[in-house]
Length: 508
Image 1 (tube, helix red, strand yellow):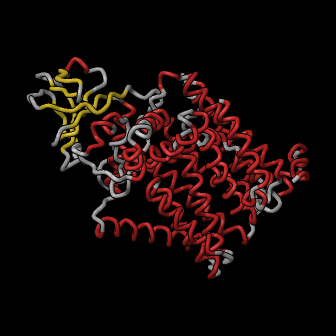
Image 2 (tube, rainbow, N blue to C red):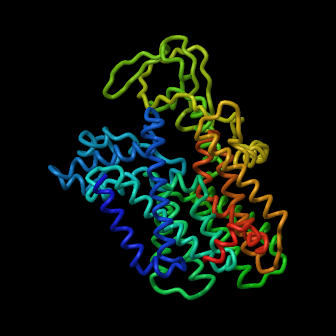
């Protein structure tokens, strides 16, 4: 903790004197206040998952820290191995010299993302934290503090990008970007979200400088190139969700399009169709099939289960059916199925087709992958199949879940209750923006841009995610875009009539 305190002081000095922060349009005192409050979010995240729910912390953060420590353990005696793993100088097969000593000890190193034609972002986070251990010596508070700094810089870049559109509402823009509760929480831990938030801010800021304001320097081209490269490694779908509305925004801005809403609708679906066709027919990668598989994986996660794999099949047993498995070995963990067992499986060469077995006769060996207890926050959801009608039928449910789940359901945990309160506040803020709306032509382009980012992101998350906790986490990155919509539309006078908010406005 002392080391984390030292780094906290150093980061405060950087915020006070750094050119990037001085040119943000926010006073240094306010920046230090925002940074300090965000650091408290790191403590909240740690307390919830290490203290309040200690038994459930075999999650992304703990897995990442564990895998990074495996890489870091090589440094004292085998620095060459550390560098090979840090920079990816190794093969993917079990015969690699690093496998026996390191890779087989890791939790998430071998997990592939659904978009298998992009790089594996689990390894990126593991490598980043293995590098940070050079300065943290494995102390989690230092890693959390680094994530807080990274996400804080991303939020500040978002503010710098959009501040020109909210000249009379800048304090409220700060609140929307820095204090959306879910964003505040999920960008304060050792997760992908802080990195992704920074990439979003960097990409949008550089894009507007280059394509909209046309006042770019060489560094903007370098930074946007780095942001795109990292997006393709970390969260490629976020890049696509931002890029298509941005391209439309740029055309509208420079061409003075009259029917902006109609132009957005036509252009958005045209570009999405072109992207889908290009991936399917040129790269032979089917995004729809990936969405279907992702959704089915989340359905399986919400129900829990015991998952196994061999060279031909991916198998799921019911979580309670442990008596139907015969353990053959512990290292590696291998099973054989007992006669008459029931399970479902997917052939690896036809992963979209689910096969149900009611009376097992298979005597093959299977490697155990994971054991997942049923999710306490699972949402009932029909499994998608590979058809347009199946996807379209789920669209209303997708948006319902993103806006209304969780919403004070019986038996909610304290964290779900907190998320329910957030959803109510968001809906009230949207309603306030609609009731006290002041529509102006100059706002149309930004309004449609924000709306299409939110609707496309929420649709993708809603179609693929059937666990309310995961929904809250995944949509957190897009909450600033959602909350900027009613803020953009709302009359300035409405905010100024509230005494506390009026004082805040006068103090900006």
